[in-house]
Amino acid sequence: QVQLVESGGGSVQAGGSLRLSCAASGYTYSSRCMGWFRQAPGKEREGVATIYSGGRRATYADSVKGRFTISQDNAKNTLYLQMNSLKPEDTAMYYCAASFVVGSGGYCYTVDWRYNYWGQGTQVTVSS
Image (tube, rainbow, N blue to C red; front, top):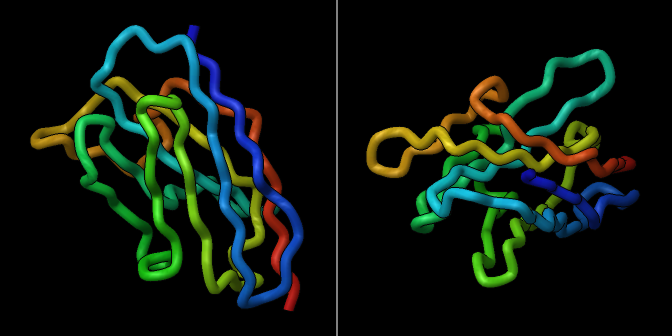
């Protein structure tokens, strides 16, 4: 059974940085998509960044491009999200997710319903 455990959230001031980690276990298939999603109070969950296990192709939400970087260490089965230049609007619960549905050419979908496995979430709070 796939298990995902996030860590690294916390409270920072605007302009600061955080790195989220997601430890994964229980994979059966090596080809997979991994993603970070977030949900702020009163808002729908949104995709932040996704990455394909077989390469470095990544997708980002427009709101985080140039500030966030998704990466993975397949040897450690760990997914990361480096978040720089944080803004108060980045405040949300951040979730790690996994999907074995991979699009053409290693494309990873950015919608949450494509993802079957979820972590418990880690809170990120950015103060102004």
